[in-house]
Figure: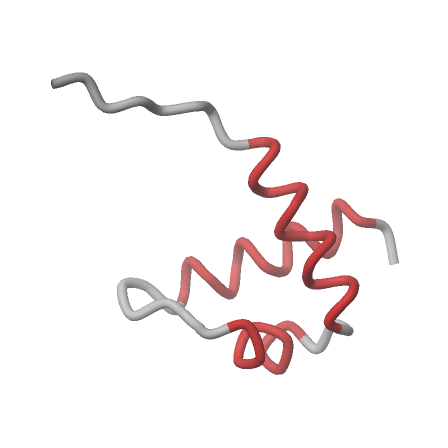
Length: 56
């Protein structure tokens, strides 16, 4: 499976799980991906998110 497909599956599942979120094992089960694929997909999602900083 392509990493971008894994990232998209993870994004969809996390969006549906809001606001409670999911633990890693729950995310693996919900996406039906392997733990390795899930980690890789999360990495892609993190890299694609714009950087945000909090100014005080």
